[in-house]
Image (cartoon, rainbow, N blue to C red; front, side, top):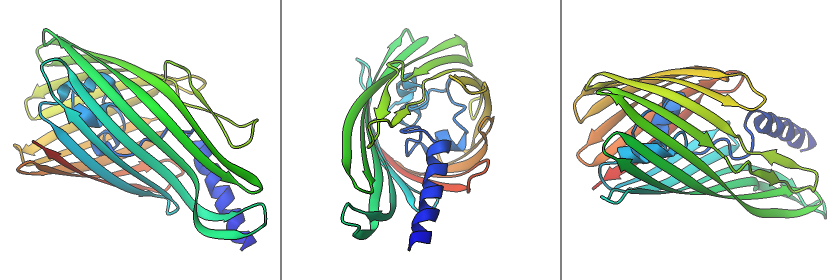
Length: 292
């Protein structure tokens, strides 16, 4: 049992080192499949984690649900909805990421298949459009974290952060996007008083070009404080109009590759994505959406 717990702790610390608190937000299969190189793309509720202004790409009312099993003991799920109106688009998304493992309380009683850490995010998004040329958007994120540690009472805290984004139409088929995530510079206090998890504060810029109506290309550059500049490139191609779309993306830091497809059946969309990140196992993503 001690060996199993030790292996879990090492694996869990490796995950936390690779992904800071609230860095991985579930859902958004297309965004992940395109390696997050989507800063300049107007694609609706699915892309608000990269650029809130993308909510202005929503043309209908949409509801989406997703589930992911990451690295066996880490699970993620999301539920999102978008509302289109002439006074601006509104999005609401609930995301949850949780780690399952063995837990020993202060009396040394071991509980199996216990949630060791849970991260919940509620994102409220609002976007506006000006003359079909400038698109603005902002996220208000409510962050909830719960942790369990041996001999320590469960830690429950609520925090908030905010994001801002803008997308401009510079030519007929060219779009330029800028986004700042966590401009409130929020950090999370852990179960121990000396634990702090800093939420990623990132600045991104992206250029989107539509050479054809069915083809979208994206070039993206982003910078996180203390990390190398990251470059990404992605493609999205509608092979069969209103029926089947494929997409792919690549990024240099962290080195990752993604590929996926979207299949539409009337008002229902099914997305599947496959992504790889250097030094970590590959991941599968699936999302179900309904537009009305």
